[in-house]
Length: 107
Image (cartoon, rainbow, N blue to C red; front, side, top):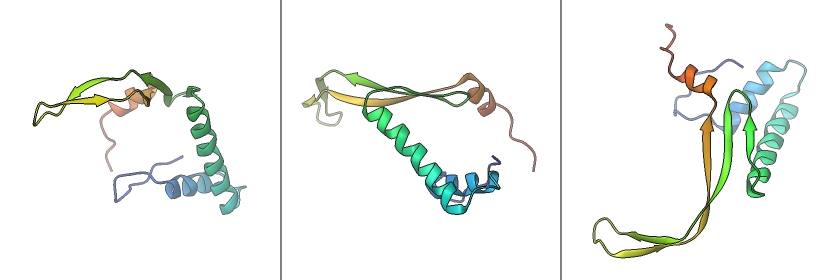
């Protein structure tokens, strides 16, 4: 899948749908859209269930449980309670990190 420049700086769901459609000549545009939507829904459901999601060559998403604690308002120094919560973490695969650190290709 070839990357294109995004004027707003973010890759959107529509961009992913278009990339899948362009890369898979046998798919109809609607099938490509359904495929991307299904994939994102499956990833989301796995994370909501607390399961890790590992995408080889890209990275791993994990859900961590954070304990409650006491924080401070940095401006007023007033203590503020921090509730227990689940947070999403991402660890990039070594190959992706290596690609990120390559010099940009000349146009």
